[in-house]
Image (cartoon, rainbow over the protein chains, first blue to last red):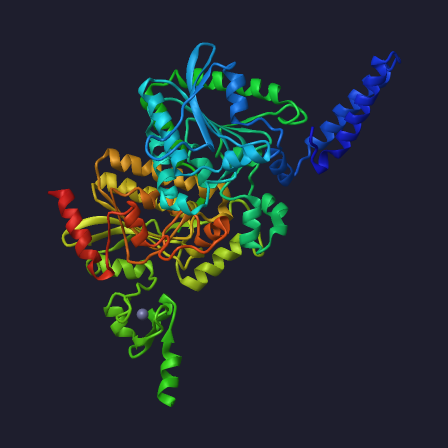
Length: 318
Length: 281
Ligand SMILES: [Zn+2]
């Protein structure tokens, strides 16, 4: 287990627990101590996680042990998933994965940005930063889902669309714009879930849907706090301040009416209890799908369009 | 020498200043640095007569170039930016807005309204780079959105002139969602089979490119305008070397297949008119 700086007090207690549990297995009666420690850990977690700053949430959203898209898909479908590759035009983008999968025999199209856990994997997945062909692959899969009347689930977890030279040559902006407009009109249910990082157009490129759900310790904004700090303060050092200013937490986003629901994470975060987190997400997908499937496709799309066209805050007086 | 000194004093830079300057002043091209009388420059559509550099101009200038004289009626001027997140960096967003209004004389980074090209009415939205870098916040999204409602109601074609550094950071996710908002409305426009011409001018980046700017039935651009998703500096940092010559210019985008054609500013009105006739007849 890796612990972030602010999680260190928990690490200390957990280490202690492990040592004592070892003694217990060697025949020493430590039941009472163990129970005490577990309670202490719980209280410590409560203390730390109930007062996280926006920047700490950003750190959690990037925790290397946090479940990634494929972890969600594989557990949710119980392995009943077939990955589909390629945009049929240029290549297969490894930063976005997708394919058919099922939950209790109901077929869904799963799509999401995929990050890597070690150096090699991270490079392979390009840190979850997609090129235009990734967005085009995602759209191809979404259109297939529409064709066969299957709902779509998008897992959003990206530090942004890849700002490379070739990405520009192949039309990064056009690819995202096209996904956004196409997702507005897809005749099937779309559930988008921000599971980690939701940075800018790179996230929105697979982020238009009927229900937008956000995990408690994820973030969503127009720019990362680091880049915001660099641009507005001309220095990397104001990222914590930028994280505050951007109002990027799930709670902020919900209060601004920009997401529909916050998915609570277990005490200790998704990285501490990935399986429990994923099974909560699975239940949310099912219940939202059940609700959405009651609407006619026309109602569904009108509601979707109206939701997004109402977003924004301004004054309207002379 | 005194003659030259006088010219220098008369050299104008910002679009707004030009409007207030009396005749007889001079303009210095930001590209080739040559000096020409301002009136000539203006007659030449603010394009340098030596090097053909298309100077960045304001929404008012574009309205004058494209629309028939006195045919433009501004709509939704009452919609103004607020500071919904109490955003504060080195200065507060509220103050930034005040300063931008004072400096530019503009309400926000876009002007929307109805005008005429020939005898035909059009809905025109035009961005202003001078207002916080032409950034797209809630107001830009709302004005485009309402203008599209007018397009649909009156069946007028839509023209959007983009000139934007991207989404407005000080409105964070609210500004990001304007990409979805404007695109959703463009979908409605498209359903109603009303034509949309997108003119991309220098510069068009980020959120604009990733939404309405790239979604025209016809996408056109001015010569040598810089257009892209990520800014050139970011791309340069990513690849760790210098960018090839002409990267992210209109000519580059045309070659890569993202634009229908490039249009010189002096031909802009005629070309748009021609397109509109094709859509109409
Ligand atoms: Zn020149």
